[in-house]
Image (cartoon, rainbow over all chains, first blue to last red):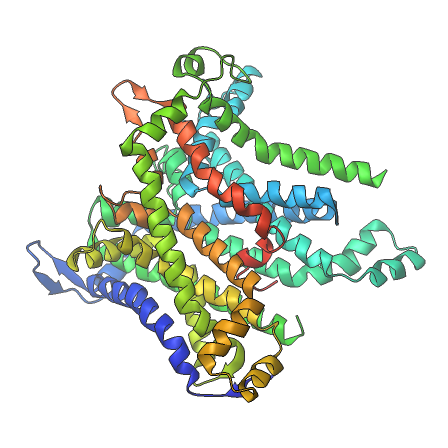
Length: 289
Length: 267
């Protein structure tokens, strides 16, 4: 749509600007403030310069948390994206069953995040959970509070359970926008199922898939509640992801300076990702989405 | 043959999705003795006692009331400020519009963990700590940008000629917006409201950090079911099931827009 230039539109945006400034900029300034100061209590602060940033960049703790975070995001993307596409391809295109699938698939997306954690915490327990009990019964030793591998397995399968539907729903929306004529043309050309997917469906889904990948990457990058409820970051620090580590540092140990420096660097990474996201979206729209 | 294969794939996937939820439901209908001592796939003697515990104890059910209060407040605030802003973004070019639009998106993506401590100090210092409005305002951090993005997506679908015709017919901006424009994007408003409601309802970190007693949300109360005699599994499961209900009830109405909502209005 052709937009007209109108500077008065600023007045319409003003409430949003004020509200978000109130709830984002002011708190963020507090963080910036802490990140360059040191305190000995009693509200006495000293200029610390970039000391905290240097300390955080050299701390093994942060690099380890970042490593675990990247591993986690990498694994769930590698599972959820192909699985989501596969599910979307098998969804009924219309009618009663399509509605049933849409509603049931959306269910996990709407469950409060800590309840998601609780569900899997219970589900995985060897004594009362179906998954844990079954695994134990077939002779696989499985204890997510003690065993690192089991803990990772639990939080990954939980995330797959929680968010694969999102990828599937987005891919499904992309598939539905393909005109029937494309499939008829493919039929005339006697294209194989694989070729239909490779040359018709995948290119047409690419836009929404980019959105799905970026959304999943960013949301998994700041995941906190679900793994926290299930494992509490343990055993040891094995599942302490970035957000869990940050909350431990800021609210648990009250190490304000390092936590603030950590926050800012964390935010910077997210901001960069958001920029990529935005660029992808706007290019897609210009191309005629 | 292909239809059958698809049905099997979907069946397996839905089974995978529903099994953990079923298990929670199953446990919520059992007594603790049955949960801990026998392993059964369905409750042997179904009981509603766990639900009764929650619905008769103010310490429990006030959690739901608190959650609902701040979630509704947040939805109303978010929509009220997002509607005019989304209209501006969808219709006009103005100085810095693209930067502002991106900045909003970046707020939606900001990790709540970063904001937990500053929010705590900020709302404590202005005396709003442990109030519903504090949580509602804190959740605006991600819900206002979400609402703006979703609404902008819907508003772009409305041809601009409608605006122009209305102005020629002598409508003022306010009257046009409420009388003509809002009914046209009613479904968009519904979807945006649903997503604001949902994201505020599912969030725990900020709402837990900002409350202690008076405005404590149900999800935070759930994290404390451990009593002297260990965890009360049945009640925990029942509380979990009750938090799923609000989403499950309205999901049918937004089923066709759910992808659009999660993708910030961009599908």
